[in-house]
Picture: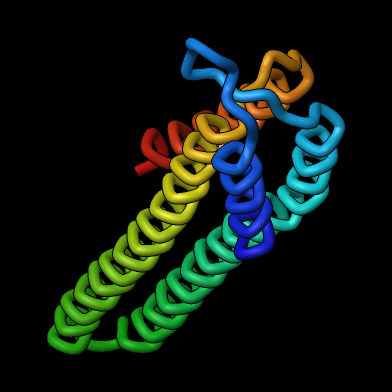
Length: 167
């Protein structure tokens, strides 16, 4: 992200050092130079998007691991319960312990899932905000640039909505 920010700083420097058009607040810039910088930004942005994708994949792995752990705890509790059925008092204790273990496993799985979702939502929200800032800085009359950012923001927004709805 630092390289993208450096390119944005370069754009600002070009704008600051450009010649002003008399009697207006507009400046004259080298169109090719600006397009070159925008192209560099486009090339560097996919890395940031790959990092966001990695975060989502890691969140999914955490959720899968939490589910596996919960399933294993439930399986162990069920096996233990079967072994304890011999005696009524032992059976009652087994039911109580199994219920506690299952409840604890569900609580732990839920906490892990919510934590992973909050983290993912935070990272995606930060990425969305950075892209919105970037769009505001490099917005030009080029439809390609506008469409690229609009699509990227749309995908990020959908991912954030999906995370929020799955809570």
